[in-house]
Image (cartoon, rainbow, N blue to C red; front, side, top):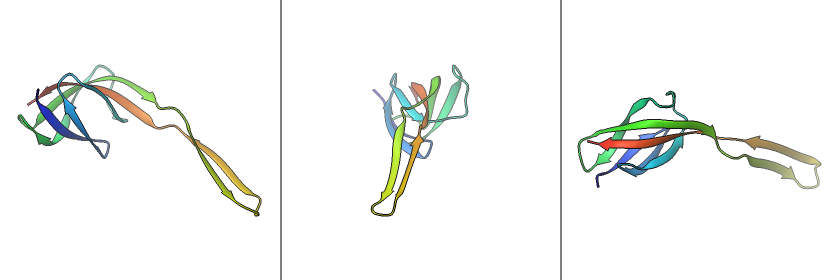
Length: 90
């Protein structure tokens, strides 16, 4: 199996052919094919993937508090993601 380290959304992922991974949101339609940047590869430097779906992860709660000051703030955040399937490396 060919392995590669790709860069997507400012993060790096170790992938192999046929693998499905979640990366930060990409501007591509579901079902379309995308070319990814290979930082390190066992084959040629070209990696093609198919966008499976877009979604949003579960909510995390950001809570701030300063004791004895009556200060409390609660915020929520949901990170968007794109699920891609690696078709070929090289």
